[in-house]
Amino acid sequence: MMKVTVLYTKESITIEILGHAGYTEACGHDLVCCGISAIAQAILHYLSSTTDLVRGSMVKKGLMQISLKHDDLTEYMTHMLICACHEIKKEYKEALKVEVIFDGD
Image (cartoon, rainbow, N blue to C red; front, side, top):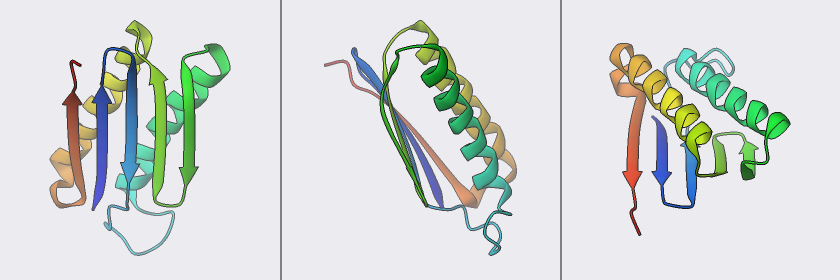
């Protein structure tokens, strides 16, 4: 199962994508993993190349972490990722878990 967690605080937004969906055994052919990874990497590359809103990131097999400054643009971009995850989850319920956490402190 693939898990997407988005944590919102007053100062930052953290995206963590962990694991593999397991929809198919063939590496690189898992539609769930490919779809979510492509969206998250597009967000990371766009924000990295056009803004100073990326605090840090790590991408390796089975794990992607992105830390962003919290502002209107990053909130919009992460909302787009969450919406896409929910759409994918409609078709692949067992392959994906999505968690959104709001920490007001």
